[in-house]
Image (cartoon, rainbow, N blue to C red; front, side):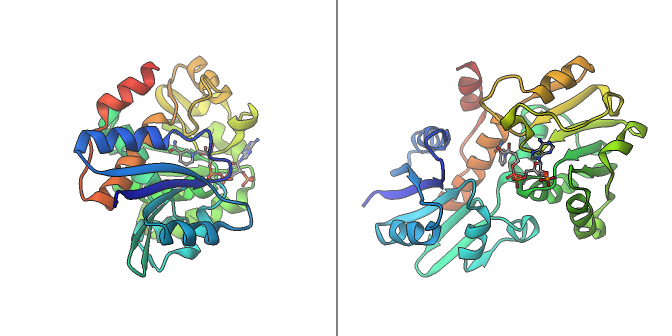
Length: 270
Ligand code: NDP
């Protein structure tokens, strides 16, 4: 029987994951199918149960189910525990492994695709939701000089900073206080761009020549990207992160790491 995988979310029609995994499967010669699965908002676990019963071997999980996927897993990887959220499930008999590949996806996109060093960098992460929490650990692995977290609701940024304080120089800074700092890499991990919004960010905190990384993808030049470009930064969206997190999920499922550069090139061109 052909191995089945899926992206589970609500909504899920917009997802580019089936296209990405079809490319990976072809490139690595894997006999598998990857489909979209729309789960009812009140029945994530039932949807996963039925998918497993029907031969599902693994799934990616997107909004709004990453916390439910965390609870569904019977075993968690370290990075899933650090993130407090799961975006990848692997089904092995009765065991459900929960992983979080978002952070390593961002790490690889910055280092391998954009060729921007993390070592010694002053990094600002905007936002304190699931995506922000998931990227702090992998970013710290790159040995930056510091990571600042700023969020509309400051207490959430402070909580993440406390969680990672033992692992490196991570601190929460109020958005209003950012004018006193300059950063080499500014990552927009808020969902403000979905509504064409922009976090209240003082222009001076973006160093000219900095990398401005918009985690959202597929919406063209967001207000954050336009703002950062005006300040002399290099702006990029999260398509590379999406492809890299998918490659890491594929590795977990199939034991093979697909190459990503030609796919990224093709999808950017499109
Ligand atoms: P969450 O809902 O968990 O968190 C949203 C965050 O955005 C919170 O910190 C919230 O602040 C903040 N926020 C929302 N609206 C505004 C606003 N108008 N102004 C300022 N801050 C705001 O979302 P996620 O963390 O899961 O996702 C964040 C973004 O990252 C999304 O755009 C998502 O698409 C993207 N993403 C991209 C991935 C990729 O592979 N490229 C992977 C994962 C996520 P508060 O705490 O005050 O509510």
